[in-house]
Image (spheres, rainbow, N blue to C red):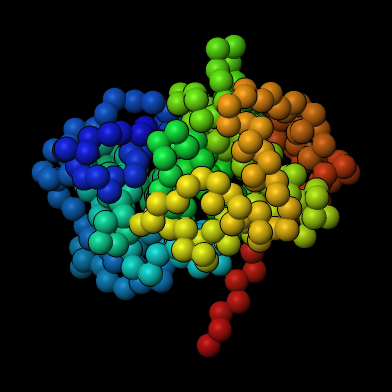
Length: 320
């Protein structure tokens, strides 16, 4: 996702912009033309409590299923959809695939997302971008220097949420993490996360913070709590995109839910200092062996139970 600041052109409620390249975090690209928001045919879909309430008649079954899948991933991770009402505006553009997205919180949650006319059902089924955007709705707005937490949380939670919803295999999630997490490590001239607003440190540095926090919370709680519990608590305490919180309030709220101060402690360590993480040792302990773009999972590894808990499929019980 490429962070944009076109307040005069778009709106001060704009959270972020996303261009699709690669796996589950966007790579930098050219800023989109603001005329895309005005000149393209569009399809409106309305969600109430994460369930499609209304959709224009010419919205396809595939588009509706795509929105349903992204909302289901959010329910699997957070226990509910993070907004009572949300609108998804699909801008039909040239080409194929889901190509860009914008998330707003102004008079309600609103995602605008560009989908090519030639997009196949398979492309919609494998899309990660809409889930990524929905994750943004479940954290409050933060000061600009903390973009890494908003974008890093979306980068980390999106594939985990899809795995918990049964949409991705754990092998796929851990293969992506093993391939991409090195992007989040600090370079020779990097400083802490609050002071290095590069693409790699914002998206994958933030995601690496989330992964390390998740593992550490689970280690300290004997795997009874994880980052998911912290993020659910932030959401349940009103920490949504239409509110603005100080970062330490966000992290303390999560810490209270887990009973350990991992998030606050890690932030004080990582915010101004370029912390190196021994990723080969972490993958070995979690039982993740990368083989090219694939991963083999070892259930005899010391932290294999933690790895399994992070991406375990959530059992959703319907109450009638």
